[in-house]
Length: 171
Image (cartoon, rainbow, N blue to C red; front, side, top):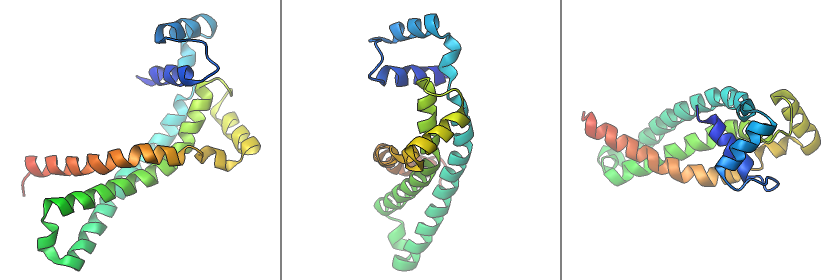
């Protein structure tokens, strides 16, 4: 539902665009291309999001279990009960989940943005052209920046999530 807003944001961030406001960009797209063009690139998100989210939640749960088990073996059950230690473990699990899921989603995000800027006619032609002319590495150029943005957020989000879960569902 909000994908057209993402397209408008991407277009406005493109330095070659002349629009200086959201309204001006909407009018420009509507008059020259049609509002349907704001959905260009949505299939990249649809295709990439399923596997990325599956990896995200599965890797969070798996790394959480592994870290909890490792911590208990190293320091015993009492050490694990400290809220600070739990938060650190859940934060690490959130970071692992983000690193793995962003490794899947980042190439799809790159393709989405290229399509939003009308640089290619289809997802397949975009992927082929980027890989052929720029190399496979071009799909991951933004990966470090993506991690710098997402890892801190998810390292905080999961400890908060687990705290709320524990508060609402005490064992």
